Amino acid sequence: MVSKVGVAAMSVEALLTFVVAAFLVSLLFVLLGMLLSHKRVKRTKVLTFECGQKPFEWRMLQFPVQYFPYLLIYVVYAVISILVLVSLFYVFEVPDALMRVTVFLAILAFSSIFVSINLKRLVQRV
Amino acid sequence: MSSLILQEYARAAANFLNELPHPLKDFILFLHSDTFIKAIIFPGLLFILTFVMFTIWFERKLLARVMVRLGPLHVGKYAGLLQLVADAVKLLSKELIVPEKAIKPLYVSMPILCGALSMLIFAFLPLGPGWVIYPSDISLLLVFVILAVTPITILVAGWASRSKYSFIGMVRLAFQVFSYEVPFFLAIASITLAARSFNLEKIVEAQAELPFIIPALLGFIVFLITAIAEVERVPFDLPTAEQELVSGWQTEYTGAYFALFYLAAYIKLDAMAILTALLFLGGWHGPSIPGIPESILGPFWLILKSLIVVFLVLLLRGVFPRITLDKLLDIGWRVLIPLALLNILIVAVLIQIGLI
Image (cartoon, rainbow over all chains, first blue to last red; front, side):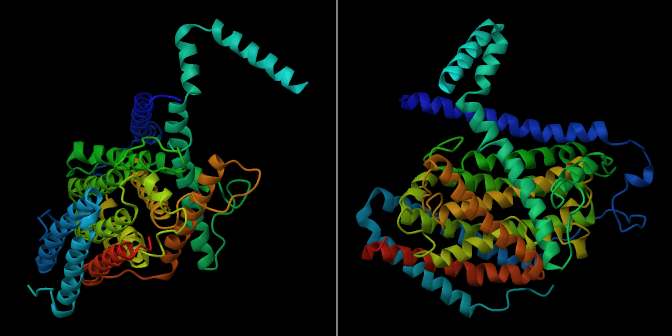
């Protein structure tokens, strides 16, 4: 049997080979494209796409503000999902803590169901 | 008699190898080492590329059958199998256009980064007992991290193209991917609770008797829906909506750059299918066939299961219309997150009772 350190070193070597190969294949695609493609420089070709029309002036498009409440909700839930992850680590370390974590999860699940039933019409009219 | 001949051949080959100059000999030894086979051939590069080629061909054939057409037919010996190679050559021979308003360094480098990063997911996915490029105790978290990083390259690409359609597609992608990561993560968390590990191999070993789809059925539903949203497949293909946005954040990309993004999307789809099979469908466990060794049978069952998932996901494209952004966001927090939390609760209660 190979020692554990030997296995770790071999797998790091495999990972490095794989990463290098993945980047090389992606680069190879672009290089092949550069070699095979035909080059004919025309001004109309490098304009931004606008359904066959001449493009308007570029101006900054508006961020869709009417969906802002959703952003707030998802930020809150992202923090909660990290709390769930931390409590799972706690269960891995201390298996007796499962009861307390179950109570925590029950509170989370039922409060989220309550909120989702009661909070309506989130899209704001601008 | 035949073994004698084989020994003779082996001795001749060893003599030939010893007479070669040093760097060449090292190279040949590297070609048959474990490192090379894992990184380039089986769980690595060639397997990924063939799997992706098969998926794209299968999608075109399947959608054609859904619409009562024939699909690819003429290129290649059987049923247009080589159509994809022809398409790749066609795409590579198209012009590489960089729009004059685009931010050139970002615009050019993002396709390469996206393709390489989405291939990197496969480095941590075990395809059988021992068939993994980099075994790690937190492989599930590593896969999640790479899945969370790849959309950022797409966001930067959409920003760098400086086009209206790219911008709208990019904003939609940001909303979709970053909101659906929360239920995705919660669905994964229930599995780690059931298996008590973040190691994908240990998670599969924990499913030897009962695949996790049975105790965590709600989690499976949430995971599948969010996975489809993460890889932008059809009910959730808002960022690249062809009818409204030309093709969303891909609008300005041509030729080889477009081919890389296309490849990356299908690599992510296959990775998601394999992840679904690993987490919920029992991984490489399956009925044993006499005469076939375990090390071949494991990957066979896993790939079969993931192909079933791929079939389901591809079939959706022929069946469902696209949904709107406000509905997508609404379903995400109103249905999927409560279901995922409820699913973790159910798993925790089942562990308390002692059923898992």
